[in-house]
Amino acid sequence: MIDRPHEGPISIGQRLKPRIWPTLTEEPVTVPTDSALTHIQFRRFAGCPVCNLHLRTFINRKAETDAAGIREVIVFHSARDDLRKHESDLPFHVIPDPDKILYREFGVESSKDALRHPTARKAIVTGVLRSALRVLRRERPLPPLNPGGGRLGLPADFLVRSDGLIVGVHYGQHSSDQWSVDEVLALAHSDAQLPQSIGEEWI
Image (cartoon, rainbow, N blue to C red; front, side):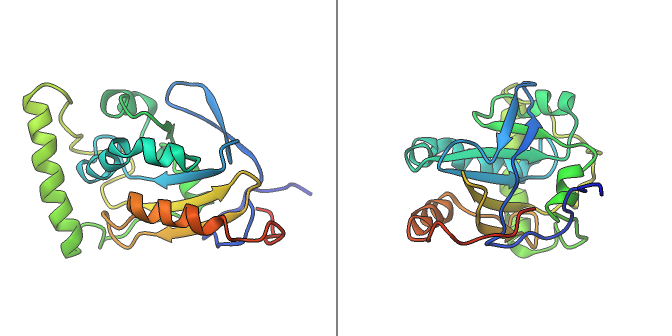
């Protein structure tokens, strides 16, 4: 019998079997990592102004997440060449997934409402303005007009212990619906209170 990859929504209490993912630098990373916790972020496309606005908060507070034993792994539904143009400065493991294989595996979807929510619209305006400033300063190229995988992707967050136990899950309802740094740090603190024996369903 073929052990097919899991596809669909993932729940707290399940366990991830080790996976090896190729990164933007072509050095593979094992997920979950040997850090105490792995925060897997499913973003949208390379150069996405909303994604970059959000990721900047994690860059600014990297010392805090490092101190908490959290390793960031960022997945984009973009090709490696596009990520090199737009996201090569991210100090995290960046995973290109242009065919959305991992998105299907983790149940991360797209929605026509991704850009309609008032919070998303506010983030889009702020993100576009900041992106435009960086473009004018020649710090970053223009975001793609027709990104691979489309513009309607939804974000998602997963927090995974080194033993594979999933201790946090969040599926975004719009393009700016994701965990903040404070929420990730709070979940990391809560994980310290969980018993080691829970979670027997491996996926």
